[in-house]
Image (cartoon, rainbow, N blue to C red; front, top):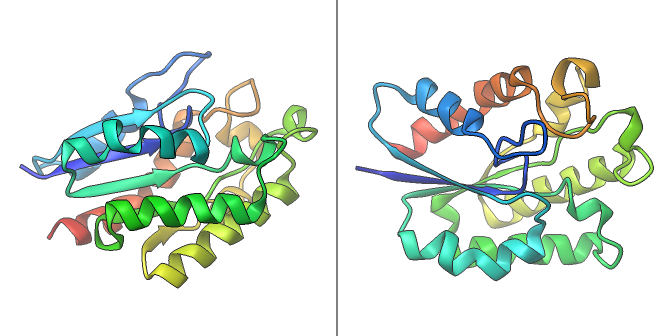
Length: 186
């Protein structure tokens, strides 16, 4: 049985009303049916690429995944000492250790009006572009989720906290992600 790891922050963890849920994992499992892949969710609330690197061995590599979906960035944009270059370097280290052929990068998405002071759309777009640049440079499959998310209103995609995803956001994201996963698992 093939093993997929979803690796990221609270959005990856399916945070709903401040607590992790299985929404992202369950929706992916439904989309992949009848494929019998094991899906492990390693999303951590409040995490960023620096924290992801610290737990890469125990949360990802130790499980010998066939495929890793790397989905960070929304928290990285608000870390005071995080630079765009450091964010890219962190992604590159993850890709090097996991292996480009086993990886899919997802760009950060959007935040709502009440989150613009710490996670402004302009900065999220810069991090999304950096994610795409890294993916192209390392020849890694990627989903430009930001490009899709900005076509929708925050109210349509986000919970009342203007940060975490409503079910509709996961549905739209999986419309793009599922075919890439299916292709890589063949």
